[in-house]
Length: 83
Image (cartoon, rainbow, N blue to C red; front, side, top):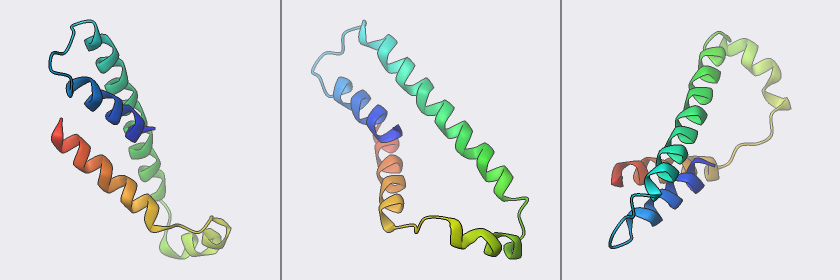
């Protein structure tokens, strides 16, 4: 979702002239990204309370991770750097 929001914001800024009416859309989409990031940060706080041994007990129940998630985080980093 963050990738979609940032991509749409970049498309607006790629226009030769950014209409002021687009600013409301941009701010709303950025606020949406902020809320998603806050949720992710809160989840990291929960993970920090789990010991490595406790994590290993339920790791097998998690779906396998892939490099695709890493690619998504990399794209988000690159896109935020360009805004």
